[in-house]
Image (tube, rainbow, N blue to C red):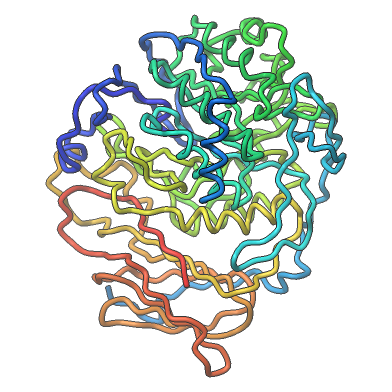
Length: 547
């Protein structure tokens, strides 16, 4: 998963030092403690006993809304024989999911005065949730205003030390513009985190956005019930709290399946209407999740975002989980699963990748579209987990000692791609591509290159290949020429979503030129370089979108 809610103690001297020694240090000396976790498809819970409990924040909505409203108003060698192309999507205007959407008694809704969501109803607070209605992006247009599904993004509050209300407002605006409905706030014990959570909720309320909690049980103590109880109680009636159609607050976790009994978790809800949807990592080979934990009101599959092995992602992990979780969606239980664009961490004791090749982000979203009748909420992992290279939001100031492999490696192009796929998932109808758009990403050095950083090559590095990944959303047939350094290649493209991979070559950048009917449609230069002799191992991706 993401390195959630991390406290740190040591001043980061340089990006190279961070890569070499890998401690999750932070440049803000006020942060205390250190936490590390095993994450990914087969994450194993490792609970850390951490410091002080979160105290209640006395901030009030009226004090922050004006500032929030003000911010919102501003608001190598390539050969043709090695090209591999997937042009699977055509006729965008008429393409729709083969699945039939289900309506569930407790599907997430926001009460906006209209009964246009699936079975909406008011909760005891003023913030029951209506998923945002997809409209259009700069290069796509939704073909339906249906709002049957919800998309959220995992947000590590531990990486938001410096956030002001206006920063929250700015990033909420970015997320909402791409079809994201809420942030799942992963919190820890830092004394400053309650203030950030309060600001986040208040900024969300001002923007018509939502928040929910993701209690990280690899960080929070199992015997610490106060932090869970106090936050559920405090924000249940907040207008930005994500709720289901019955008015119950939606609450999630990262692990905790071996941490508390069902009765313990029920006690943490303290009588407050709560739809508890944990991401438990229990072995379900001989067990059914809801039989073990009758308290749950849904299931969250964390590891579905990445394949478990060196293979193209498919639906098998979700299919198995659905067969073993025992939830009853007809009775209101919700199934939540995940999508992620990447995974690379380079810390001592946590130095590995998960399989991120084969257009992972686009392919996973397409699987979610195809199986949308089985899914109520999609959680993007992540908005800001820099340490694990899964972020799609802007790179912030508060990195967890990850500067050596994150600084300069922008991922916001994946955020722009999200809008198209989120609209398709929510509505069941693929948007119309109204303008040609290209997305390009690649790693900075070869799998076999050596680096003198002391940690060594990341585990499972053989699970990636030296390829440049290209996804072109095309309004019609044409030809695409990709140039890397002295070499270039041309391939035909079709109307729809075209997936193309090319061998990475040593170059300072990539140029893509699309032509149609003998005329140039665009020429786009992507600042994606590839070379040898890296100063430290970096298996992160640089991502660009154009024109």
